[in-house]
Length: 407
Image 1 (spheres, rainbow, N blue to C red):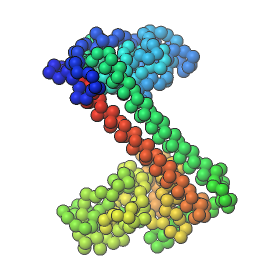
Image 2: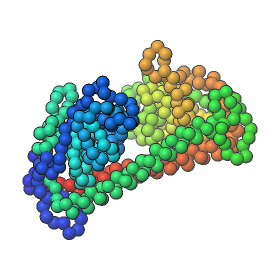
Image 3: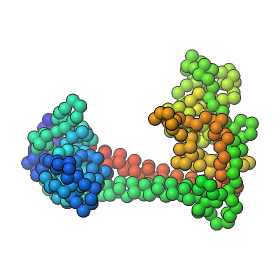
Image 4: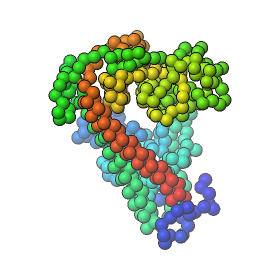
């Protein structure tokens, strides 16, 4: 039940002071429960009626055509809100199309305020209290119609709805920019590296015309200590860890999340004993178990430490290989696929043995071209990170506003 004592939001527009009115959702909007057509009438013909059956047919708050039908059961108009009534319950989207409603959804004729109110209800877990079914959650028509809502006068609804519509548009804009930049980087990685069997890329910077050179992967690495796997577990186990020390242990999470916070410490004596497994700024560490193949470049300001048995350390030859180029290349989809080839005998994904990796034949440009390629992809990464940060900030802001501008 909604607390009757609280009938005003924490934040509201100037000029509005009246309490919000407690109503049943079915009193405020028209609700139409879905009814699935016979499956024999389902098609993939986009000229037929769009069928909406559940959350799989909604993305980013909008209906996405996925299945079509020739049979009309229950319908929803353009602009109607589509609520998922079967697991997961409460997902909400707008319909930009005239659609047929399947059993897993309901249509609600509501304004932007109601849409955002339903978004908040999903976030706060409102529908879970009414969900029935031990293995397959669902809510029924009465649950929806009897849902208690608090609503202001229409003018305040419009102002709130407009505000959240603008926030959603900004989120969509940054999401689109983020997706476009990710797609651009993926395309450039394909076009700016030679295709299999070729020695020149399809697209390259002006001034570079030489063929890329075939080398062994090991030739790109330090000739004395290019690849090293972490020490056996018996050499670095929890019994050796101490509460405080200047020397730390780096783990798989450091490579996976590209962060260098640590959990465990070792003594100076143990550090010197395991000196072959020390990492230094400019080294690369790669996850070798679980989430495999993730690679990170060790930054300048790390604590002295060693890497554990779940990591593989790579050290490049700075005369031959540009650090940024190597990082971007190793993170590319093509290299990640090569590093994590599936075992033909199972569904498991395994890291290719390092002895095999060192013997790979790879195509690389001269170092000058490596440098400009590395700079290009780092610039793209910075833009991608910027839009991701803006996107996260906007989503956090919206969540906060939903809490403070709705009762």
